[in-house]
Length: 250
Image 1 (cartoon, rainbow, N blue to C red):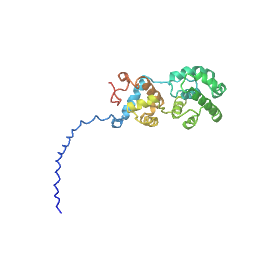
Image 2: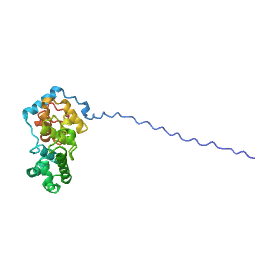
Image 3: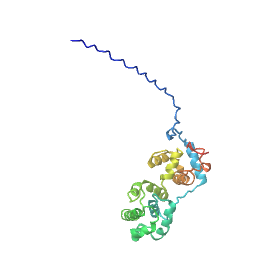
Image 4: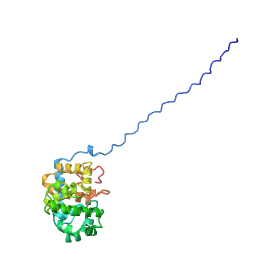
């Protein structure tokens, strides 16, 4: 039997190895601006800031119109997701006919809606105002309660509502954090926080007791008219030299 001679398999051509791409070092990306790295306010700086607020406006007033603690409570409940000006426009006529829980219940939910229909979520708010009026009358003898827990138990009232009422009606040293106070606390780094409660507690911790009665109003007014959300008016800011905001214009 003839031998079969096998030809050697052809060698595969060597595949040239790919040269590793040279790694080009990228320039370091600019560090993100973080409040965590911001130098904290000193007690002296905080005192100076609020001394300036006090000098410019010794007796700041809230802009929600009211005639007694009950109408203040109602106005604050109505102000959720609404402007103070819009609430005042609706409540001027309302409070002429219903400035007590009893009168509000006598007015009734349907007629109340007619007074406040220019305010956002007016149907829900009308229902809450009638319900809280009944609770104030039945559970608290017709008087607005004077503790945070009791106010928060009322329909439509939360922590911010309680803080506003306690401060404005009863002179308590509370700090109501709305969108303006939240922005000022974070932007200036006076009391940075991820939630309104964090900002509230931070402000209460750093603001001297002598300024706490009016601090809520100073910060609201500062945020509403100077430290605006989109175009802050840094050039007229009373505390621009103390502010920690890295993008301030002065």
